[in-house]
Image 1 (spheres, helix red, strand yellow):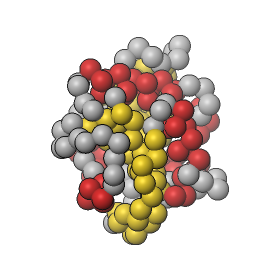
Image 2: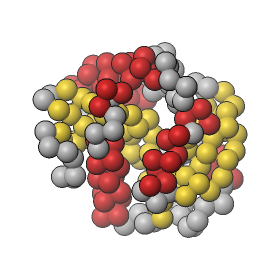
Image 3: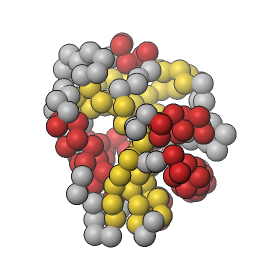
Image 4: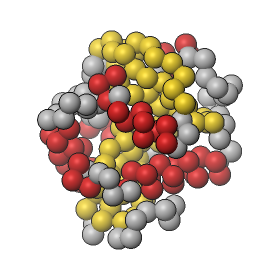
Length: 180
């Protein structure tokens, strides 16, 4: 995945990265809460310590770093909310035939510098190499502008529906898919 801007790199997170990843998400949460559009992440909610540790252990958490500092992170796996089964997706894809993106964040002070774009392109390239049919994700309604970013990559909004997540309860989500 050599699509990163000069000075930045993307790699799978390791167990010894946990403290830095937790600090990254905490800072991002603090920065996002002051913005009108945010994903409703919370320091004691999502992404939780258990969620992040599990993603690291299962080689599903990717980070971008610069000079040894984590500046972005994303979980890439095939786990989905049961509400995904209610969506009419563009392509038929069963378990293991698509990838799902979760908890994608870039440091607020570095947004707009191409880091998230490069990470997304790396995820798309990796998912294609794995022979998957699609990439899927959900965006909470409060984070609506981020959908436009995904649309620039070719993602299509397939549905809007209420999903339940313990951290936020029942909320409206926008369901996106990129057919590969």
